[in-house]
Image 1 (tube, rainbow, N blue to C red):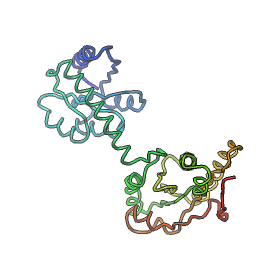
Image 2: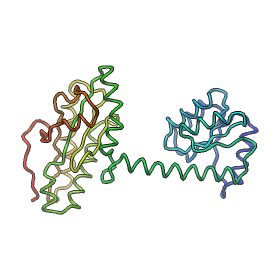
Image 3: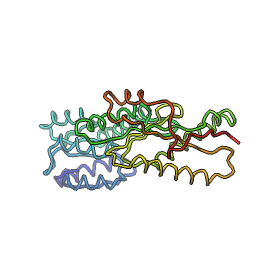
Image 4: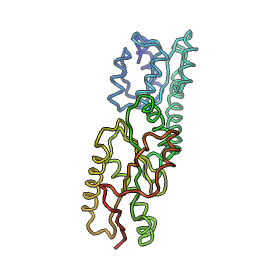
Amino acid sequence: MQHNPADAFSTRRILSDAFTPAPDVEHVTTFAAALARLRVGDLRVVLLDLRLPDADGVEACARVLHESPELPLVLLTELADEPEAETAVMLGAHDYLVKGRFTASGLGRSIRYAVERHRLQTQVEELSLSDALTGLSNRRGFAVRAEDDVRRARRSGTPFVLGVADVDGLTAINAAHGRLEGDRAIREAAGILRRTFRDSDVVARVGGDEFAVLLREATPGCQEEARRRLASCLEEHNRRRPHRRWRLAIALAFPRGAATRSGSVDDLLAALPGRLALAGGQDRPQHRAE
């Protein structure tokens, strides 16, 4: 993203010298065009000139980091704008280079380091907020993602619903078929919960066979609709596995009052009852391996 054609030409030439083979480079001259291109995807790194005609430098950096957190960001700046570049690095940019003062080796090294640092940061974030078995958020990740929603909902009065689910009969599956099958049941349950709830909702594995879900902007009847979708997904899932010696079952509950209690998300989770009602309001069955 560079407005000055001479700067763009020079940077492209230096990039060609820095990498073998020369990388594919796309150039846009305005911040609006840059945002539009970022939304298309299929990029590996962003070079952002802090002097664009339609955006403030630090604000532009913050917007890129918000719009495309999956991409490493390297800044190009004038010597006089170094303080602004340093502020942008504090916001999350990986590095900055002063225009006219960097070489091919310097630019190449900056980009490679930015890509590697971003990869390592992403791994750390995934390990600390995600559940390794299912790929869902873990308990900490759920608290991080849901805390702002809960706080905002309490201020504005926007309704939300906190639900809990577990894999019914997991102990029997583990006992009859071993831990690997038990882990398979948990992973499959996670997939079904992903399909049951909206992308805007927050679903997490918060313990052994226990899951939590936050329904954002809850509407009347959303709980019953979630139960119907869950029952449909479970029926289809089990129908496709007619020869399996166990059937997957998921208990789902939306305890009354969970959305109005005070305290953090962890407090809300801790206050939920341990025994869940089966989705659809039926009696909780005893599932056992056959």
